[in-house]
Length: 271
Ligand SMILES: [Fe+2]
Image 1 (cartoon, rainbow, N blue to C red):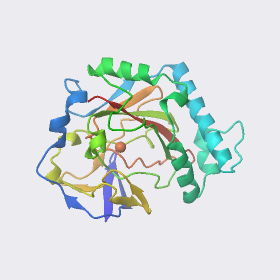
Image 2: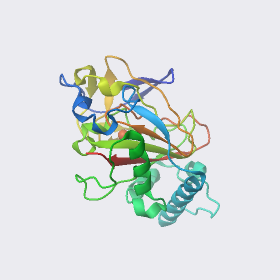
Image 3: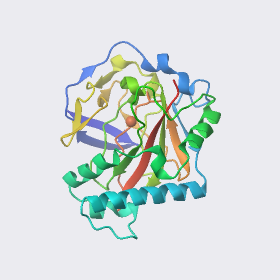
Image 4: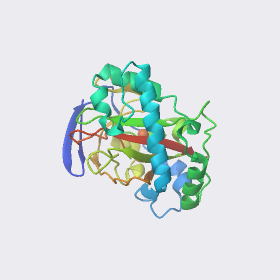
């Protein structure tokens, strides 16, 4: 099928492979309000929060730069010491190579980035009024995801709710822009979509959706009775986009002509 959606009013369409089914008569968020209950942004499901100071931002950016230089060297790609994250697409052009980089970034840990993520969780918990932990008891090890979206390519996942997977039901999603992020590349969300009933959402099963042959863990949403109209809240550097894992998000198409976008996706456990 084709996934048709709008981002800030602009229409997009891309092929989304999979078997699609309308969901059951239930609102999943009802049972998992925990991490954002009582927040004044509970109805819209997301908030932009000042998370990092200037020094922490620079530290994070430099750590990720070092991680990528190391990965590129491992893949026999010569990256200069002056390598800029925004130029990533000039070094990694083919889909196959990009896939290899992504699989190597799966080993990122909280400890390896020179940032005190425990302190980050604490800052956010003070804001939401709910305890957060770096350790998710349903996971063997912590997961930090580096999202890389090269310009004008479909380096995207389909619209989805992380909360469809049991292990993400009780987390708070924290999306942190690192490079190349602006009103044309940052993560899109559908405000209020965490309140949508599943019978109004057409989606795949887990591991059932693929874009360009690349398969995704989380079920992909191809359509809803309300359409798929996303907006980009566009957090600035130093800010983080906080959202319930039941908010529909994804399809972070990078419309910038010559700039790779990078962001960290963290999931702090609040169960
Ligand atoms: Fe997600």
